[in-house]
Image (cartoon, rainbow, N blue to C red; front, side, top):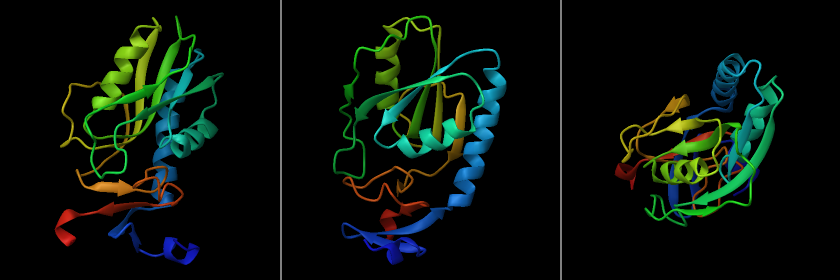
Amino acid sequence: MSRNQMDLNKIALNGKVFHKFISREIILNTVSKMACQINKDYDGKTPVFLIVLKGSVFFGADLLREINLECSMETIRAKSYGKEMHSSGKVDLFIENLNLKGKDLIIVEDIVDSGLTLKTLIERIKETNPASIEVASFLFKPDSVKVDLDIKYIGIKIPSDFVLGYGLDYAELGRNLQDIYIHKEIED
């Protein structure tokens, strides 16, 4: 994918066509609003931002630049998509020995789709006895969620179509796109 292709309103990737859906400007505005609320809610606290790799790297970096609290950051790796355009239903978590006991955690997710990854992650983290756990998800697909979840900070609610860019990938490609693109099955 050349740089010129990334500036268009439509791109092709791995044989699929994606259309620009959310601009970089809207992304940054949304991140700023989310950070403002977190700054307010955690005033006087020292939260730990738990960035879920790989997809949340871009959102996590932008979000943390807007946080004006004393805070720390950790990363974990969760995987449920593989090379497909939908969750496999199988969640692989890669969590190192993190000391989260008694800490206020904010899990930073790029997207909540089925919710299975996040539910599994929260259950594992609860075993470490944190003081609190909240979730900040940049994108949320309410029509796709299959489990009961409480997500305190939601950036943008989107339809169930596949999206990529701003950290989200399709078979490990497209994460570097500044905008978010959408693929609608009816177009193929």
